[in-house]
Length: 222
Image 1: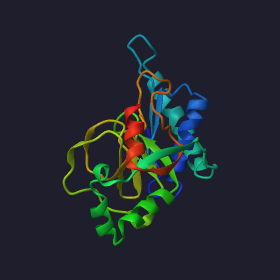
Image 2: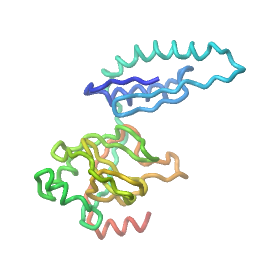
Image 3: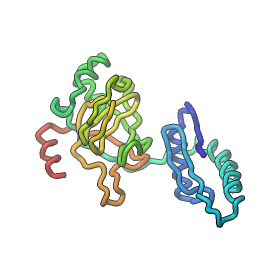
Image 4: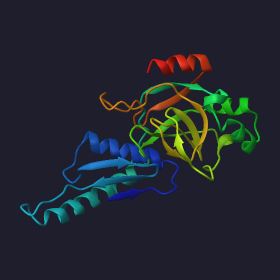
């Protein structure tokens, strides 16, 4: 089942709040919940042939009633604040291939693009696409651009990217169509750690500028 708050300004906040409530106070009709940018998806438990065949219908009825009530309330709940995470960011040419293009498209200088990105107050709206990939809402509107016309076949791990009203850091190498404006030396996803992802849903993210020499030193220590 899915709740869609459409274009409501508090849509993502409501999605994260409601998902957090279901994780904090588990309901029998909910096996798994995932928050989206403006939606929340909920999976009902599976039912085997040995169980009551009417159980699925009961779960659906209970879930619908619960979601109908709570989805409206969630729009008014205060935002849940995660940890403040400071991520180092290198904006030097070798690791920022799209920075001049972004500056030209936005009618800004390269230094202004960097300043606007550093001044943005991000929140991890969604974790998805790939393990540890956080969609960071809150990008300065001056940097708003559509995705690249032609996606790259391989975006390097650690790349800091922007598209639309969001920014992100690629936790591993993958194809991608966002604009690459820098690189972060931190390892964002480590399967053997708990939690495996450095950035969690709702975390507040700020970027801190570092030079290329410091970046290379930190990268070598990962």
